Length: 485
Image (cartoon, rainbow, N blue to C red; front, top):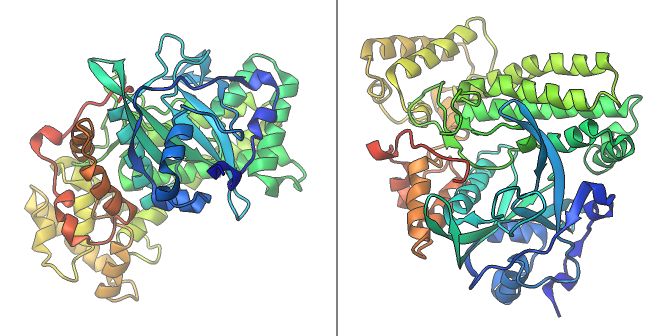
């Protein structure tokens, strides 16, 4: 009996017209081996114990064999890349294998990255390498641990197949899990190619599958767009509060569910630099860390234009006008939580601004600053001050902050305990990811396994993994990352 006989699947995307996709068989890799299996996520999806079926899972999820429930396909979409519209996009190195239905009735895509060439590969080889696969696997799970909406990673596999990038590397595979792989670019493609019936069909399916609460509204498409705007605003606010830089906010990398999508040249802030550009291909700084809120609105405006056949202009504009106050509102709430402030007080905005100025001018380590503030019930305030080169400025800000804390009803211990629940001790610094990649390329997954422990629960102490909370060495600061990374 196959394990797929016990897992409920629903190939609903394949039931759409062929203009939405092209059926493609994965191109198998040579001597595929497991790199990682996300046991906890697998159990949530309804998979049996890994030890019972690892060989069958390896064969089917790598594309070496195809079980009956699979209908692998490459989605067709378009998108604005660095601000310019590109009609020739689609799944160029990934295939939607099937959709798994959990016992609770939720549907999740299983998507295989690195599956080989598709009609949308353009000049690419359709492959992934170990470094890009490890980075996505670790970061998507790190984001889940931080409670930031994201796609997930079920598995990683390596192989002996050579893949050529800047050098020869080994081909790898990642099984990505998501509630949907529908992007802003799906609507853009159908809009710009004037596929009116298909455009409306996609909107109807998105409503049915992902926004059923909007179906009873007087204007269901407008209600759907309002929710997309709100979810995107919340996602971007979470990125900014957690110091996450995506690197490639093209509209084809924007999920209609407001989930972080497509991990390439991402970075978490080490030293606080609001102008951080983590993608070495971003010559103009379009996707710098401090530009992400603005680009979120730009991308939503592009989506709004593509939805104009279905939604009145006034309703689109009204929804877009809510983005900035929504994003700022979410961000302010998050910063208050990070600082242990329960209420909203006059002057909070200036307290936040002066904090960011202090960190920026002194290149203070972003996560270390907040985590140390969270421990003020256990450490001397000098430990916070010592994080800042300008000690006098640090003393002044800290005095203002502690004075502000006195306006709250919670005790210092209660405040710090709540802060430790949101300010992570462990983040996926780029140098940690690189060390894990170096070992994985030699067949050693010990760093990946250790990181998965702390990233799943980043706010706990994990004393046995204390070394993973260390500040980056000089070589690990400001690492240049490419889109192929």
